[in-house]
Image 1 (cartoon, rainbow, N blue to C red):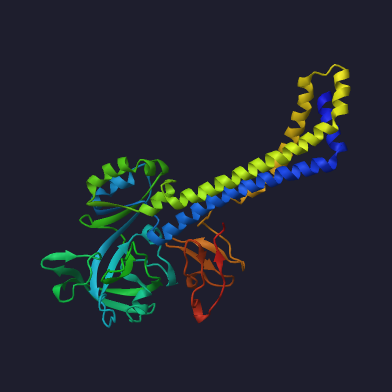
Image 2 (cartoon, one colour):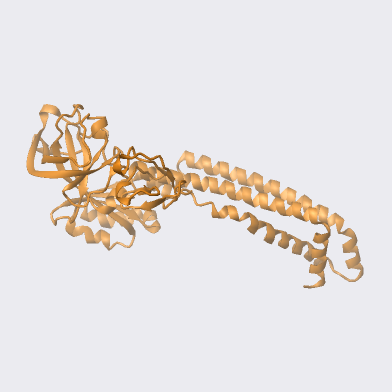
Length: 411
């Protein structure tokens, strides 16, 4: 340590209060800037999680993909995750009180698709084979047809036909103008109940209540719906990726709002407003902090006039005297900035990953969602309703016992 550094540290020791106040100012300035930045970033992250919950966790949907063409998707380096679904057909729903929804619509999903489509489980578990089924609570709340976990459904499955044309979920019920042509008979055991699927899975005008079974292995002639999640590069150059894959599919649908937020697009007036407000707040904080810290250093310089005079009398140059100020600024910055850096560790946006419950249980990642395992509760009976923001306790758990534990995703 040279004589200039010794002079600097001696001066700070002699003026401990002023040094402490300056460090506190630096800590508060950095913490405020970090907090405002985290607020803007977390807002965007929360919107992304909301869109995943509302519309599904995928970027593009490819419809009409043959099973033999799946290798084009699986070997594409710009795709990080794939989920597959296939429509099996319609079956009449006996006793339905909604005249516009007289059917059940059976879909087969692979394990990844239950999570990708953001299905929210209320009771039971995922299907483990193609003879098990999860149904929507919407059947009982809207159609007034009551089913329980464990019930067996014998369904005559077929296609809706009108004037020789096959209808799908995008075509509303046509009453006498359509008919159901039965193609197969299948028995299913209900193993789970979910909340009403989001509008991207089941449109409001859809004539069938969506129910889901497991797709064990798609047949070669099966037409699949492939849900693809892209890498960052793939999302930025989606036109190139889509151009290659659209040749092996009948259509491509974009998850528009999710992609809009993931691409960090500033075309949205809401996003413009949020980041403009954050920029203004950060600018005010920076300007205010600069003047406060500058005033502190000006006071320090006034107190060191005699010191600088003595140094000049023994031959110290102006450059050497400025180094004393730089040493002091570096010390205060190196001490104050890392101290306020603790707030950076808490700036993660919204995380839909694993969390820990307030009551001591844990959140575990399952293919379809999170499940909360309260202390003393067996794994097999504790599947609960969940979403990307928080997990809520079910109406009843294993053994008919109710519990009110909550498990919040860490933010």
